Image (cartoon, rainbow, N blue to C red; front, side):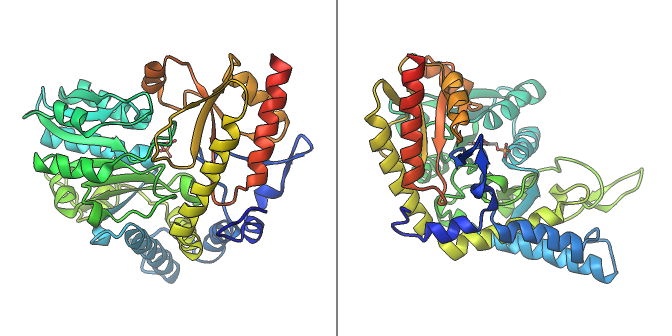
Length: 409
Ligand code: PLP
């Protein structure tokens, strides 16, 4: 095994799914940017909550409800510590990065924007950070301004500054591109934006599992991410917001939990963070997400980052040797995501045949059609690595691509 910095062989034992065979071949799972696999402690935690403390939280006086509430609120603190938020009031549980961004788009535009005000996005955004703002173009009359992406797959601060005007209300951008792997210079973007008193939302769906994030030193105003991309369960995610911002924004959804008092004359809302958490929260998911964070912390995010960088370098070197290989996204600042095309082969054909060899890669536009348009392509293949991947798996991918390319040419 190729664990230069981590004991990958031991780590892989924690992920039962990785032992599987697909079409009689050992599974090579390289679709981690779409979702990550779950370690046993996370899987067991879900079973444990349902088997021992399951009860609806917050409203119950009985023992189980108290235990489930404690577990959920403890999870909030674990998330708070993971991103170094100043207060657990700044951690809102959502369904995922998508819902987190929709929440801000809706509440922010409704309360902070007038028709004609502008929101700045970049061309490399996932649809989750485009469409919620487009809905607000219709709902509140805001306009979207788009930062261009260079051939290498980077954004330039000058281009952002050029788009900033007296109408700019917010900049929302991805920390790491799910297609290009580019790590954006978000700290500089935030400093620039704050010079103009403009808040920044970071889409951290592709970064929070790879690089340490400290929201206080980054000084971002909002941050969104999903549990399932960081070894936690599906269906739960996080919105971080600075307390002074979250205090200012109106609720996103109405229902139980988010109220202080309800009457047909006047309803008042609960305090943070509950103001933004209508309905029964996913207390099983939050508890299991906290377990995923403990798992990451036990390995160490900086060791994970170092090892994944090694995998990225190794894969880039090996893939580049393949005839007709075109890597989309060649920034020097990249995370462990490689998008590529081989000769004139359609990514879907290549992806299907790789699947037959047990290799799981993603094909298509990766929910980033405007970016595809810039590169003049319909889609790519994408291999994305996690800390449980190995050099051997990259060798299998390379051999698989060569085999499929020969078959199709
Ligand atoms: N933002 C980025 C950069 C992503 O890669 C994704 C998912 O692929 C999302 C947002 C949306 O995440 P989710 O579908 O978990 O809400």
